[in-house]
Image 1 (cartoon, rainbow over the protein chains, first blue to last red):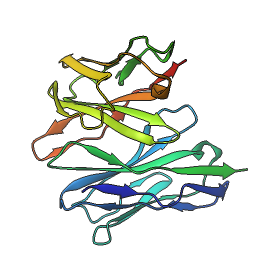
Image 2 (spheres, rainbow over the protein chains, first blue to last red; image 1 turned 60 degrees about the horizontal axis):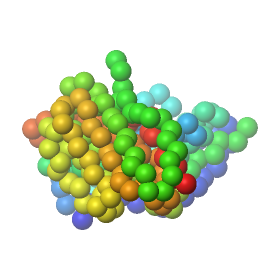
Image 3 (tube, chains in turn orange, green; image 1 turned 180 degrees about the horizontal axis):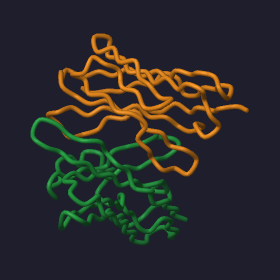
Length: 114
Length: 116
């Protein structure tokens, strides 16, 4: 079975500080993609960052970076220099090469405080 | 480029009425997904299509729900008859699937459905 677990329902961080959101997953497949999506109060789902499982190098997008540990099946998101606009629900997801079905975690609500 | 387009953005209806939600995927994408999001259940996959063919509808709650994709640029999700517990935000998403992989999934803005 394919599962995604986000163990932190809610987190808070002060503006300009760094925060890390955790995600673990389970799959028997060896080839897959991992994603972090952001859902602000507007409810629009926005892609934050993507990682191919075959790549050892961690993906980075400006202030967002991931720590991908394939053996541990862990995929955490680090947000540096947090901004008020980062306040949102964050979802971890993956999709395997063989099946085009995306699996989402339950989300982590991040509050960035001024 | 236009993203995934959903209509209507908001729908308020009375219990027992038929509701039809519409989606236009990103041009060139060959996979389409319907999700439902509620506070209680989070984000749930209802059904997804590859090349207009339904692949997995195991998430469809019951026979009151049906989805169609008559062509590559249009899909509908119908609820008949609607019930108050169907109140949720319904998302459509699309992606490009290819041999040996799949690309990022892009979401529409969602349809907020309220059934009174």
